[in-house]
Length: 91
Image 1: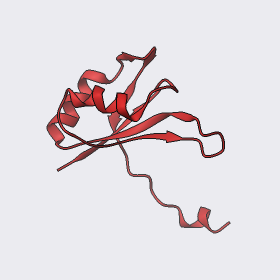
Image 2: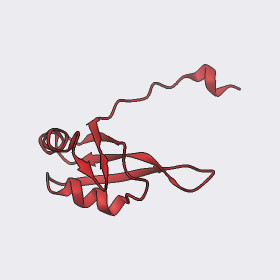
Image 3: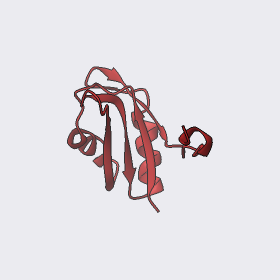
Image 4: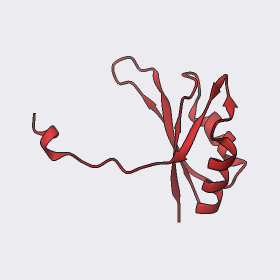
């Protein structure tokens, strides 16, 4: 079963390819997404990595959380599902 990981406090120049390489050392990577600002087209400084197994995800979280990467200390943890607020979408 795959596990989605939140990666925060990234350097704005971090790419999906560099994240895939970083997390790939812990196991198979299913997908990578660096979140971009629609208005500016620049990275927002966070993203998500989906690992192919729970074990590889946990290993990546343990080793990379708080580690410096491209000049920034990463925040790495399990991604939390964002609850959908239907009221906010009506306006």
